[in-house]
Length: 236
Image (cartoon, rainbow, N blue to C red):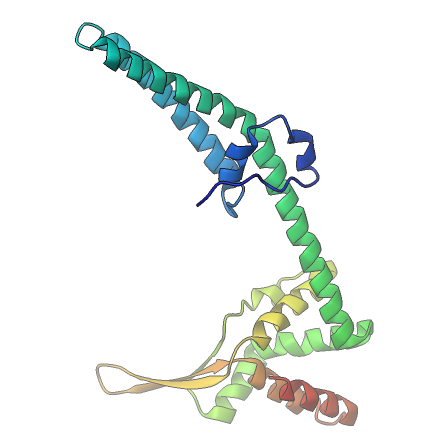
């Protein structure tokens, strides 16, 4: 990838002018393992510089003057790179910390927007849906879906039920929002899989559509809830 100067942001600004910005640009595009990559590359550059110097000394009699100069130049270049990578370590830590803080802030903002659109600040409504969602991922929901679709088993599409069942009281809304956001991107479908004996196992992959049906069935006596759920179902 072409190198480019990184876009320094707080708290990285303190490193502007203190690191090789062209070198930083070659690493700045890394999304994962930035800090570890810089650390590992610095160590590798140190080892390479040492090996080149040792090689030059070991074969001093055998090498021509031109070869010695080439090895010494390579050793010098790798030594300089190692020092610059060492200087880059604090910057990489700051960049990783900044990325994490940005990610947390974005997730919190998205959660607030989703919660406001769905429950309009009504804590009771949110807690009521949390109860329905926990029932959906538990035995009640699976039994209801198995009977409705006459299938052998029910599985959730791309969702971890632990998000709901193991969330602490303070994390309940965040867990519910994450669960619902993931569920809205999934489709409900039934799959039939024969084994070597010719026996067929039917699986219902439960997605957003099934969740909305389950909610409607569970809150059927509440006309306002039914209307809201019908609207939700139509969104997918």
